[in-house]
Length: 209
Image (cartoon, rainbow, N blue to C red; front, side, top):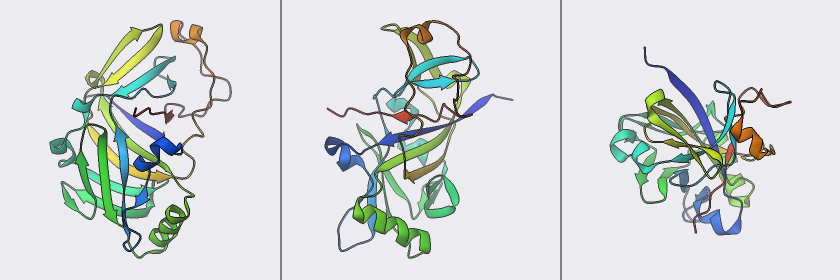
């Protein structure tokens, strides 16, 4: 059986220059929501690989996510990664969730449902209270390339096995606050003190300039 790893990545689009990539209402007269769930060729903040006990920085290569790949997935669009807070869905390319792939990454759009969670999230987006996005995915062991670059462990994701969900999240930065020394990139280290069980679910910081 092929070994896979379940990963979750967060994006913080709170900075003014990146807000156009955050969840937003396309037109104030509609319930159409759009934004970016995945960005390409941007270095993440420091992540932690529990299996190899080392820190690394990650980049999603455009080859990892194509339109054909997405058309073969069952993608749920949820709030805070909860299936109980479903807002849209695409099952093998068909459904209420629409997406496209461009040079920046994966752009999504959907009509916010007239449900309790849909109305609540719509109001939070309208008020500017939420601006984070996230995605959960699985990659095979041969789907990543690890290398040393500029004294840091760089991991490039070049092939994903599956996408589990896209998500609007309230607090995208809560796992991205760990300070890591250069030595930590060079040596195998024990789990950081106080580190959550899934530190690999870390904030990705983007620079789209």
